[in-house]
Structure formats: C-alpha cells, structure tokens
Image (cartoon, rainbow, N blue to C red; front, side, top):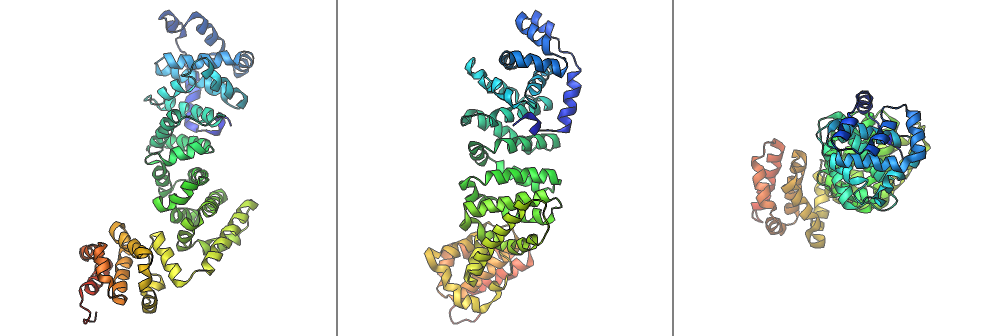
Length: 437
C-alpha cells in the first residue's frame, strides 16, 4: 500500500511547481513559530535531492515523521502546508515500510497523526485538500486496528463531497481514495451509512465517464458488496443491477466488464433472494450467455460468467409464470411482458395477489404510488384493473390500500398510455357486479 496508488496528473504537476518555490522557514523561526532545532531539521531535507532525503529518513525517520505532523498542527499558511505535505508524500511514496513512522506518532501525541491532517482537509486550497486525502487514505488503509469512527467518518464525508464536485481532479482523487479505504470492513459500513455516499458514485456512472473512471467506481461498488447488509439492500435502495448491466453491455474495456461481473457474483453469493429476481428482469441471463462465448484474457472473468449463468439458469428453469410475475414486481421494473396481457394468466393467478396478507398487491399499489416511470405506471394501472376484474371482492381491498385514489389521479397523467390504463382500471373499480366492463 503506497501513495502511488492514488495518482493524478494535476496533483503531480502542482507538486513539481510547489517544490520550486522557497518557504520562508527563517522568518517562521524569527516569529517564534518554528524552533531552532526544527529549522535545522527542515533545512536538511527542504529542496534536497530525493536520494539525500531518503538517506536522512533511513537514519532518522521517526524524528522527521513527528516533525512534519507537528508543523502541520501549528502552521496555518497554505504554502507551508503544501510544502510539508509534499515532504510527507515523498517520505511515503514507494516506501510502505515508512507508514508506521507516521501511524506510531500517536505514542508521543494522541492527536497525531490524524488530527492535523483532518483539520487541514477542509482548507480551501485544492492541492492541500487532495494531497491530504491522498496521504490519509494510505495511512488509514494500513492501520492494524479497526479505524475509530471520529477519524473515519469525517474523512469519508469529505470524500463524498469531493465526488459530488464538478471538478474532475477532485472526483478522481476521491474515488481512488475510496478504492484504497474500502478494503476495510469498517470503511464499507461508514460509506454505506454516509448520506449521498452510494448515490454520488452512481451519478458518476450515469454520466457515462471514461473506462478508467467507470472501472474505479464499480471497483468501489464491488468492494462494498462484500458486506452482507450492503449486498442485500443496495439494489432495492439504488437499483444498481439495471445500471451495471447497461454499463457492461456498452463497455469496450474488458476490465470494466470483469468488475461488473465480479460485483454481480458477490450480490448472488451474499444475498441471492434479494438480487436474482432483478437480474432475471434485467435480462442478465441472455447477456451472460453472450459473454460466455467471448475470448477473455483473464480466465477469472469466464469463471464468474459461468457461475452467474448457472445460477440464473437454475433460477429461471424453476420459475413458474407467476414466479416470473412476482420477480418483475420485486424488481420494480414493470414492462409489457406477456404475463400482463394474458387473460388466462389473470384468471388463474389474480387471487394469488392476496397471499401473505396481500403482499404482492401491496407492492403493485406501492409502485403506483411511488414510481415516476410512465411505463411502470401504465403496466401497474393495467394490472390493478385485471386483478379487480378477476377478483370481484378485490375492489374494497384496493380501495383500502389507497390504490383506487392513486389510479384516479393517474387519469390526468401527462402520458397518454398511463391515462388510458388508469381509465380502464377506474371503470373496473367503480363498476357494479352486473355491469360488464
């Protein structure tokens, strides 16, 4: 785990520019902000060739780690922070063995190493913010003990706000930092519980980013789905299965497809009943059959594709027509599949919507009340009409569940198909038993 994991061209360019600017260390000493001893130590490494700084760190690493962190704690000027962050970055880059020099600074000061870094994370300077995030992600990901929430939560909250930024460099660095952190279980829980955490990642994917950013975002989602709670709830809350299917179908890079397929495998392994219905509705089975015929440079892809294909086929083969319908309901993605328009289907199955305290009927009514998709609304209104047509006593149940009120509202919907299906449904809901509709 090293700083080079989080790399960004803009950050590298700014680092080179800042290196060439002198910092008035003597002035700080005269002002009493830096001691004579600290000045002497800084002078040995400031603007020195990398080889010289490396040899000094080899012999005096703990002293310099404490020095850099202590200076960050007491100096406020942006140019000074920039300089010290570069010195920390240089010390860590390609030298994993130096990470403990910084994490062990807590032994001499309980506020170190994270207190000063978290404080300057909110500095209104892009370089300071992103360089700090880069360093924090490396130190935190290497900790041997679970990360305390008072350190982890503010950092993840900041990363989420950077991901939502219109600034590409901020987004890029923040997503890479998350990739580094999410290897830790407590980081997955923290991101899952952070407002807008998952939506901010999905918004990037919906914006059709390049292959590298798509890969990085989905890599974060893959890591998240190792958590069973996340695997069970993420599709229900955020509808990620259709989105990831679309991304994989449009992807030109193998690694993007690979990480989508690996994420789907996690979702099935950790929470099959929560995710398989939506995968079938998203037409994942034919897509997996297609992928299984391709040539892959990575054999793991084919193994994951085969696993998904077998699981989906086994589920598909065991489905009755009514199971297919309930899978579609559970996914929330209703469309004009043959079951909806089959009179025979409704004759045989309408009363099954009453099972388990009207469980499926309640889902249908909820879709009518909550969906903003015209296709879903049209199909749901149609299904409600079919239910009361084939189950006369269903009118009262639908009315009690709020379905009648909602479907009457839909008679003025902007979409003509929704209006038409709502009208038919309302006619059936208000008709008397002897009236044929």
